[in-house]
Amino acid sequence: MRSILSKRNNLILAGFVLVKFILQYLLINPAYDLQRDEYLHLDQANHLAWGYISVPPVTSWISFIIKLLGNDVFWVKFFPALFGALTIIVVWKTIEELKGKTYALILASTALLLSVLLRINILYQPNSFDIFFWTLTNYIIIKYINSEKAKWLYAAGIAVAFGFLSKYNIAFLILGLLPALLLTKHRTVFLNKHLYFSALIALFIILPNLLWQVQNHFPTLRQLKELADTQLVNVNRFDFMKEQFMFFFSAYFVLLAAFIALIFYKPFRKYQLFLWGYIFTIALYTFCKAKAYYAIGLYPVLIAFGAIYLEQLFESGWKKYLRPISIVLILIQSIPLFLFAMPIQSPEQIQKSLPRYQRIGLLRWEDGKDHNMPQDFADMLGWRELAQKVDATYSKIENKENTLVYCDNYGQAGAINYYSTYKNIHAISYNADYINWIPLDKPIKNVILVKDIYDGDPSRQKEAPLFDSTLAVSKIENPYAREKGTTIYFLKGAKTNINAIIAKEITERKNH
Image 1 (cartoon, rainbow, N blue to C red):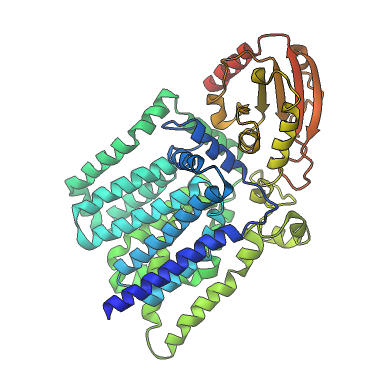
Image 2: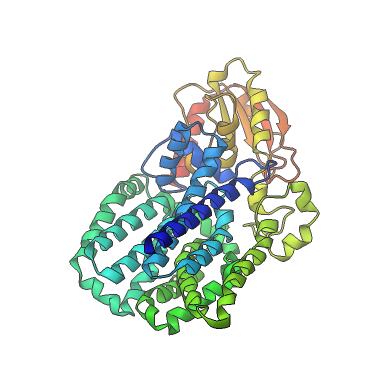
């Protein structure tokens, strides 16, 4: 009987995984390009290193695999979908470890499938990897609590290390769990020598990245300061807490059940570590005025606890009829997610529903202002157009090998490198990781200059004395693109040593 149930449950899990992959491909309107961050991450495959200004190295490893597979959009979307599916699988295994049965498995998987993870997993960003490693770490901690076997401490150390190499955000999970351990009987783990050996293994794994940070004068810390000064300053703490509720809105009752269970349900008392960990981590994020989505990794394990508690609550009598009703409720409540949080509608269709988007805060960008498109969607428009127009200019230049394509930001440079038919074009920028990738091995005679609408120098007075001629060639015209108005200039015939000017600028920016 147990074997039959196991096979049935495995088939159900396989069904969830299949649906997960299908949805991640279907929920993107073909009107959209990739998102600006995706281009930067894909370009890292061409510059493998143990660290980057923007992210730790795991993303570049996956980008290299995508490159070997042909760099097609299919594979770009495959890997975040894969890690989203793996997150569901780990929660499934967590529920099995906690002795949950079929209903709990289905309820939790449905809650995860129809949640903010749909939005997260359509983008090739480290967030998908980050959430997976948070979930995996929590699962391993449960395995250790149940068995007290040292091997799970070592597994936790490895999971945290690779989570760290995916996104430094996992440090907040650890910072939340440490005081949580002190408040529970699990504080005895601090007397276990294997905890410290596992920490040493984790340190050994992340050491190459730490050395890279030292050698490059901790560029990530400088980036975090810039982020705090330019973006996090616009974060409202009330909005942070409100968005926590929105991430799993379709299954809010499952999360509510998790909090109740971790406080009052006797079989879960030994897992109260996760309740305290949640409280400390959220408090830390709130104090730091962090972006709301940084905390998403906290919720999958809570979904597991809530699903099991509801399974027990709806076990017999008339309450058993609440089981199918709860699944249907999640399906119904997920409809707004499909309508507004996913790029299913074309930009033109979105314009017809702008007031609705505004009411739920989806038009607010990181600058704290409302715009005519959700920021992520606007960041998925205009890139192919930019690359085509740069190619049109590049094709007319005779001296291509001495022509530099310089861009204002990493999105522009990455999109040109991804879409350009000229694979040796190597667009660059002083922005983000590109400042470390600027080739100066050949004398620069011409420059294709890509400047955004906020540049403030449309006549190119800054560059005019350095070249024989400067000409505005074309601009991005997509009215819904975040890069609308970005202009392409052709600067012909350098009259001075452009390489030396660029080298000096790189040095000054890095020192700054």
